[in-house]
Amino acid sequence: MKAKTKQKQIEVGRIVLSDEQDLVASIVNDEKLDIRVFMNTDSYTGPTKRGIRFYLFDDIWPEFKKLIEKVDKTYEEL
Image (cartoon, rainbow, N blue to C red):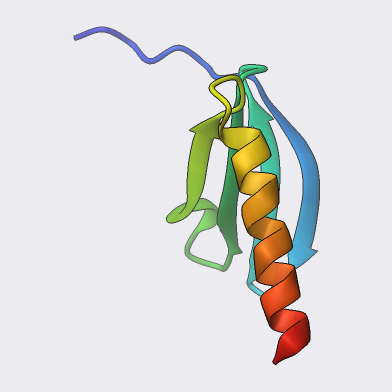
């Protein structure tokens, strides 16, 4: 069985969701954006499966920014 290689992960920002959860944005291996919920409890500290990861170089990033702008506009209209 091949061993997993360590991924280079740079945290860009963090939003506190609760006492036990943060939403963390990271750049992974200089090519992927990872936005994920991290837990900090007595029984577990680390990333959860709740999140999204995509490559930044395949034109998804501009589309993602447009999507966020649409979400912001829709939210403002509520």
